[in-house]
Length: 534
View 1 (tube, rainbow, N blue to C red):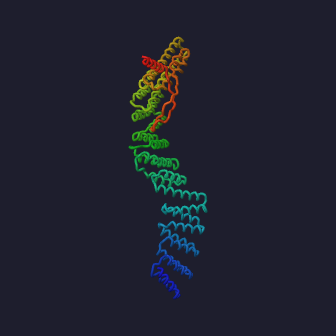
View 2: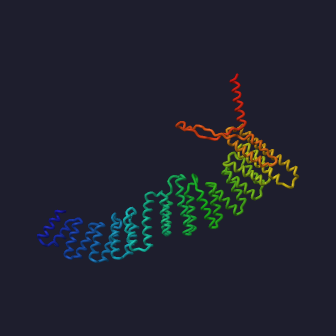
View 3: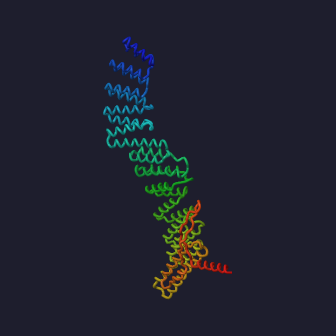
């Protein structure tokens, strides 16, 4: 090619008629860019603008590249023909709009319009380019667009440009990892701030289409909030109730309820129906939830709704289903009994408590027994309360049970002393009996901890302190010496700390020395001395 150029130039100089040899050279071969540009410059030296324009037309056909079209448009601009230059750019966009170098074409087109003071045209060029060029190639384009808005646009235009740039970043993020739901949330918030309903719905639909591939609840916990936010958007922002209902319905169909479920989505769907005054629809959703995936929250909310409506028979049926599903749930048993108590159904309340304590396994039995004892106390059934304490002590010998039992008996003393309608001698006799019962309970508790659980020294000490306090409250009938003779001495001792690597020093702790133990220890010492003497 270089050889041909040299021959061409030499021939033109020798002969002196270059116009004759340039066209012949262009017809004989298909020269590269430089050949075409040399030909165009040659024509321009002779002020042959039309011939140069015709050569440019052939040039862009022979070399359909973005750079060729840009040179053509700049040629027209240089000659002051703005309309022709714009036409060249428009033709280039139609032909080269999908080319890999299209970004350069759009930037050149927009800068051309900017130089022509056509800011709106330049803005439309950028927006058109951003909608048609693949997102991974528009970073520089966004920078140019934001620069244009900052220079010529108003506040709204600048904000739109910045939103567009952030939109590109979020789109690129969700394209690389569509299961990154935090990126979807950021993208959705961006679109909601822009306020375009169609765009917002489009992004929501794209986001919820990315269902987690693994049916494990931990992978679904973030995904499910996309559905929740979508439904709340349709209800609260868009005001389209039918769309919101469809979102809830589709979400409940997507979740694999046989493997796991979400109580939150069931409750939100039912709450939506209640807000639409569709009570039957809410009941249907709650019933379906209990049938497919029963959960504590669903039962509690459904019972709360029916209780507020005064449908007590429905509440009873729901409690029965609740307890059939979870018979070890002490909360459910207690609430069921409270319902019956509120309806003044004493026998039904007692029957519910009896069924509850008869269960082979309970999650929090102490709360259930406490509620049952409190119920009998509120009814004034002291004998039944004593019987309950005795039944409870058959199951557990916990320190708190002993103390509670003793305080219950002590409260009967206070009640007897406060009564003014009874004969004083009779009341004094009743008070003595109550005091004897309290002392007997404490004595049984003390004997249990001394013989059956001697290692629980701290519990035994706490028991004696409670005994002393209660005994002091008996007034004229008190005899604190009965307790003081049993109080232990506190001893500060040291014991070695043993770790996996061996001894690691000593630590101090508090030990208790009870009088009966000290007496036994003294007898052992005397016996050993006697044996040594023999």
